Image (tube, rainbow, N blue to C red):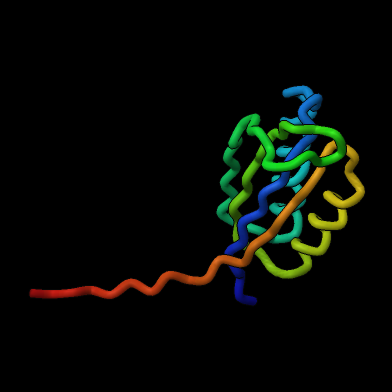
Length: 105
């Protein structure tokens, strides 16, 4: 089975504690590993000002997860994020493979 590369970014409510943030990151990392995902990279983007108000909040905590997996991982992650009250928004993008070209002079 071929694994696709994905990038998921989610925005947490500004009142979420660092402890809760780490629990969520560990939960999603474990979920990806459990379902056969590989090459998991988590980047905490920090608190950022939002362009517009979401749920009466003007700030949010951004977290980015890059990984390789299949569609079943996506369905589980997005369903979990949809039901999690700490997450205001999420977006998953499938990353296309980059073709490298060797140029010899």
